[in-house]
Length: 162
Image 1 (tube, rainbow, N blue to C red):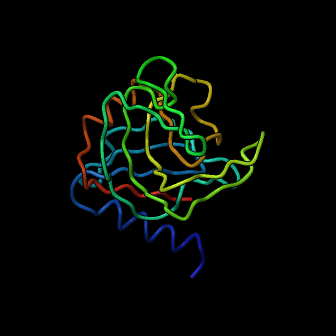
Image 2: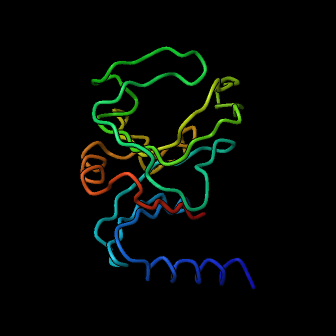
C-alpha cells in the first residue's frame, strides 16, 4: 500500500469518527475542527521548523490554560501573561516529551531541560502563522485559539498529519 493510499484510508476513518476532534495538516499548515466528521472550523496554523517538527500521529488534549505563563525550555526564564508572552492568551497542550530534545533553532543550539510540551497556542507574532517556525508547537492567531479553546475539552483527540 502506498503512503498516499494509507493516508487516504486514515483520513476516511477520521471523517467517520464520532465527536469533536482537531486535525492538523502540517503540509498545508491548517488546523481543522471536525465535529462528527463535518468541518466546523478551518484556521491557518504555524508548525514546527526543520529539526523541531510538530509530532505526527494521534494525540489528545492534555490540559488547557487561560493566560498562560511561558517558561523558556532551556533557560527556565518565565514570561508572565500579557502582550509579550509567546503563548498568547490560550494554551492547549497535546503532547509531552521527556527525552530532553535539543538542536539547532536557526540561531543557536537549544537544549531542553525536563519534560516539554507541544501544544496549540496564540501568538503576539502574527507573521509566524502559516509558516514552519516553531519548536514543534502550533501557534494560531489569538482570535482563533480562543475559539478552538472554547470548543475543546481535556481528552479531545488531536491528529497531526504530514
